[in-house]
Image 1 (spheres, rainbow, N blue to C red):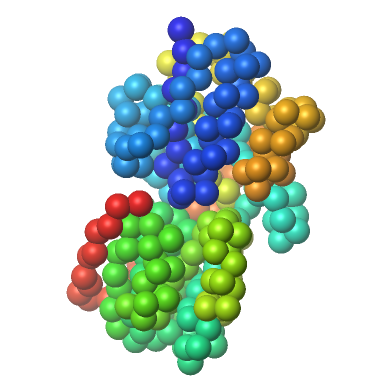
Image 2 (cartoon, rainbow, N blue to C red):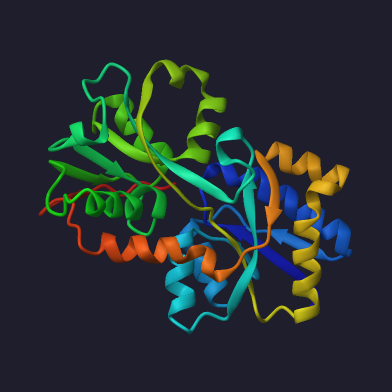
Length: 276
């Protein structure tokens, strides 16, 4: 194997850290590690499935779907642990229910019949977890008045700001990044409820990569926080460390998916596709 290709199917906040981790792994292994960007995340996932990308940062819901299909030629590599006190040094994250600051909504329950945005239907944080939450509280049919597929968490936030929708569930790590990039958002939005925690999206690796190389890569990621160069990269990516990932860590997503399958958000909904 002459080189590796790494990509992310996560939101915009993953771009910098993935690019830097690719450079870190290349330096440590004395091997070409190319970060694949500039194409839609769906194409990155398709290339991984075809064996044209070896390492992928993947949402937990499609990870579960792929691995449970028994057709996926991949395994868990490691899982990022977000920085921040709310994560308690664990590989978890939350879905923050966001509304405009000047809106009348004070809790998730108040959003009955409201207009709701979700990033896309294969997202755990923006879609799957919301349906599972509705199942848990016994609201399985037509809770929202309208739902709109935005195409990305950041676009869901924009729809909230413009008044196109009333609320959305936003990946907490994406929301933190957006607030760091646009501090004025703190004066424009409110978090009225938090759903979770959920297992953090994992990094996966193709089994076409030789087993010895897979072990080397896993060790490098797990030890990054103990290396000055690696620590700086993690800090810039708002990560504390990488942790060992096991398939059973994603059983909560499997359970939530089963509950979510019982829920219809609304009988009819408009899909608005926008690029990430």
